[in-house]
Image (cartoon, rainbow, N blue to C red; front, side, top):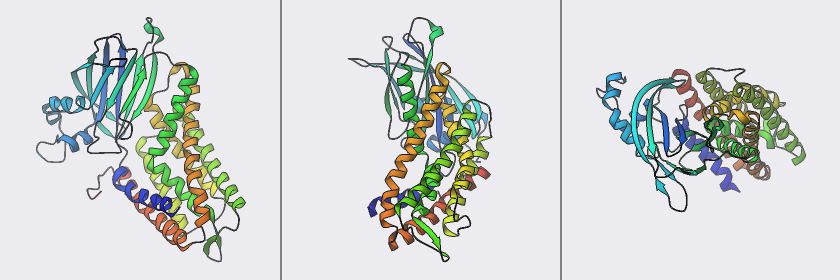
Length: 385
């Protein structure tokens, strides 16, 4: 039991170097039609500069000439880390040819836009995709795929399938047929679960709320909670408030009813983690933590929505996909609560929990989130990380 709680502390330590800046993402769009697949791949220039070196004069600034001079190197590097194959009894690899490269600006900086075309020996009924971009330099990097395909002779019936690639999921097979609505719902549930599990800032915020749940503030100090029932009720109130809040803003943002700048959202999320963890060390809010969870949950919802927007919501079943993603986020969140809370309650009266897990863990969370906030708010890269 202690080993699992120690793992939480190790997670806090590891979170700083892995995700202090806005998480590294690339955006891959594939349009499949017959034997041809047209692709567009948006990759952050800062990530490419770190991986292959684009700043030729070393002045810390990337110019158009420097980027243009590296076009062939960028294409070779990226496309060597992407493979497509028509999946079936015998896999037929698709040949990928690089096209034009442009520059676009996303909320977190400049991206190269690499266009390419793939030719498959046969029109694939299913597409096997292997993605390993930055796998050797950034294990937290994610590739967000949007695959547009008809699944029928009529191009007007085109549908969209989304997927997330990362170090733990580098290969996926996607059926090029219109999925049943239930299957599409299940796919977005999976996306939601996966997102909460790889979103370290959301996890640390949730842990900051869970750490004091098995304790009570009495006589100017934290003490072991007397009963499980009161602990469970407190956790349910807090998690329910957080869930309700981020469900509201996730839905509003995903439906394009309310939008906020990504840099502001990411900075406030980091600040919310600091505030929640600091409150454990120097408690100001000693009861009704659900109020703070609701307030900060509103901004976390915009963070969830940014990933959902990058994945793309199929217009034919927009509401169903949104509900699936939201349900997945909640399932992933509940899994963390279910794994942590019973062990924490059993160890709540021990020195190990109160000093190492609670105090030490909260302090590490503050340190980690402070580094995130510095990078996100001031758009800097802390070299030491």
